[in-house]
Length: 74
Image (cartoon, rainbow, N blue to C red):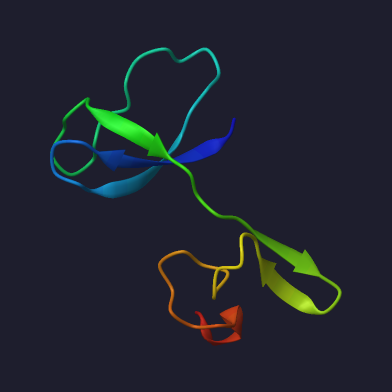
């Protein structure tokens, strides 16, 4: 079951949700409860022999993190 990133159209909250292929309904926002959310394109990270890398040229492996390395993350 893949995890997707969503943005609520009502309050703007960004959140992740596990979504089954068979789920046809909207995803409910955990902040305001609205069923009006849209899936957003998210970047991904990967692990190579030289460490953690990022896709699409982003500066960190974590979308919400400003660090360039995950070694300082807890």
